[in-house]
Length: 479
Image 1 (spheres, one colour):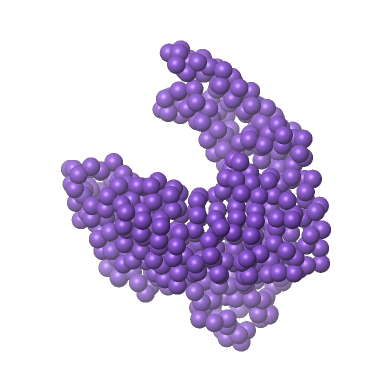
Image 2 (cartoon, helix red, strand yellow; image 1 turned 60 degrees about the vertical axis):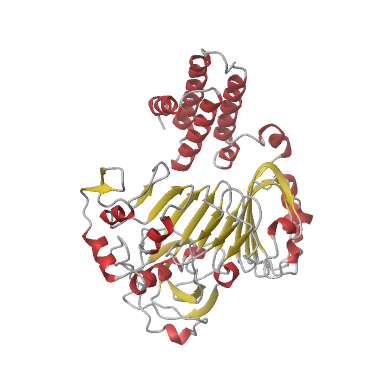
């Protein structure tokens, strides 16, 4: 357990190390990120005079970066506990921000990039942008947009694009695009402030190597070849994976999320998330020599695992909805694994997992364990995890969804009256959730979003127009 004064070196997203210090301790640790970056792990004495990292990039105010971390949270395997130093008076001992150890170094990278790579004129224009509205002309006539707009969706922009029109939006950092390139890449290269791109149905060849992107999502039919910028930190492959990817250090600094396979050219990836259906095997993970963190999130069907012992540096394994996983499928004890976190599991198998790693130096955390008998009925119920927060409330929510789903399935969607017939079914579902919230008070922001997603899926099955479904949900819900 860390205490006040403890200093930890943390690996940074694009290489090197930052450092932070615990300034207060209780149920949460208050951790101040230090103004430090080095290629190698620093020595404790190197940090005696280090002050707090002050964050003023983009709209940040210049305050020190201080985060509350749960005291029980396991220190990541690649972090280094350096020892203990007196807490300097300029390091804050309180914070209203909550986070976790894996994200502790991100602001170091973002602040340094802002200072060293973003031109001064761009920073000044960002600071001058007001909160009024401006005229933006991208080639189809001027439209009014908020001056501080940060995200722009251009998927429906037909014809040529007047990319110079983006300069009217000095705080624009995210773009969404669809189809052929049409000058997009040159526009990104000229605007280093744009660091996030979502590209649907991209062309066969995509070269983003000279852009300033930090995050890239490729959706739909995958390109055959993609060249990535050296500063990319996150890549989401939400459709077919590219055949080949060109990346610095073969993707060593990229957090990769994929729904299919790992494309050729990313052997260096250390952090991988797989959104899986069915079994996850060594073949689907690819030849990842440096894989250190693996997260697997299952949808239907909930499959198993195989081949993880082929990754000699895998120290962290996180599984979600791992109802098809057995203890024997997990990495062998005595290897590099140091942290196993499972969210959604069969309670009948939890004991075997803990026994497998007993005295093996592996921190095991299992939450959301559910009985086999209950899963036989509710495995595919999208509200099944509500029972983790409150058993009775979660079971009631699952029953409400199951009843609504059966009733919607019994409708004749080809009947012009199906939408009218669906209305009382959907209203009853929402009113049941209203009652659950009134009695148990468990529907927070996350549960409200989950309830909305489920409602809209049910409405879509019944053929209810999206605009009408949104109006119904807004009118009926009380949570």
